[in-house]
Length: 270
Ligand code: C2E
Ligand code: MG
Ligand code: MG
Image 1 (cartoon, rainbow, N blue to C red):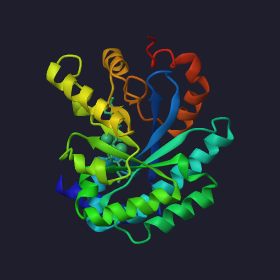
Image 2 (cartoon, helix red, strand yellow; image 1 turned 90 degrees about the vertical axis):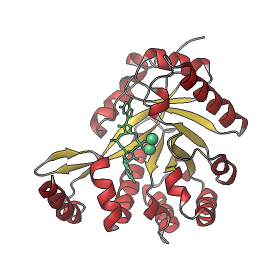
Image 3 (cartoon, protein in one colour; image 1 turned 120 degrees about the vertical axis):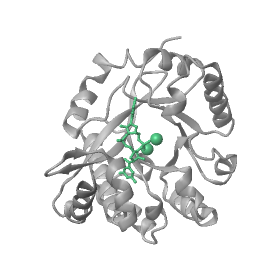
Image 4 (cartoon, rainbow, N blue to C red; image 1 turned 135 degrees about the vertical axis):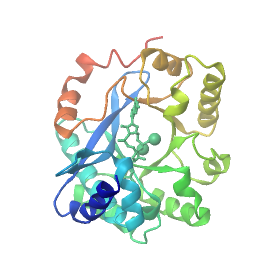
């Protein structure tokens, strides 16, 4: 494992130049209508020796080495260019979500990078959503509030990712201009079997709606979970039940066939 780690570390420095990163996209589905409203861009590393490496294995490394700033910029650029292609091929309303790491948020260039990327891609800011976790916002709250407000003025939206796994501090919801709250998969997992867990999810949905924040359920894997979320008024769902993260090619095919094949499966009628 140590040898692999070392190889990853050296490889990571060249991975951008060697064009070894790819983005997969997972649909975000409207719980009421079953339609795709957008997608989350998820980074993978196509390693010449180890094959496709999931983000959790190399993002911490990219953060420690500071490489995450340039990798993150590549992710933003690639995702925005791709959403433009999808807009132009008949899906003009889709929104793309991109995960931001703590180092990126604190990078002085971030606001200019975001503006530049949107301009180059030729898309309006409202089609870009930035996903942040509580731990990303936590370090220096005042600074984070300032940065988010500046970005908000540009027109992007924000999601609070993995909600429930950190401090779930209500002060985040109060201070940050959050548009979407993503309930972590660990809470969704047992909503159909654990009354207490179900109660927490129900309460999060009510609280978010009171604050005018939309709710996304992460990691929805079954019809029963989706049915529960529909009853509780959850807005959006993301998870293997509707679709796993997909390559650009397969996502494009799926968009074309979605209404015929999946919209019914991913929506629950009253
Ligand atoms: P995340 O942002 O919470 O992304 C959701 C993760 O849950 C993804 O894992 C996705 O594949 C997985 N997932 C979605 N639906 C289901 C489901 O129904 N069941 C299960 N078991 N898993 C599901 P992935 O792609 O491995 O990404 C892991 C994390 O890596 C992400 O969590 C995010 O924190 C980070 N990440 C991914 N891409 C980027 C990126 O471009 N930049 C940064 N900074 N972080 C990224
Ligand atoms: Mg995310
Ligand atoms: Mg998440």
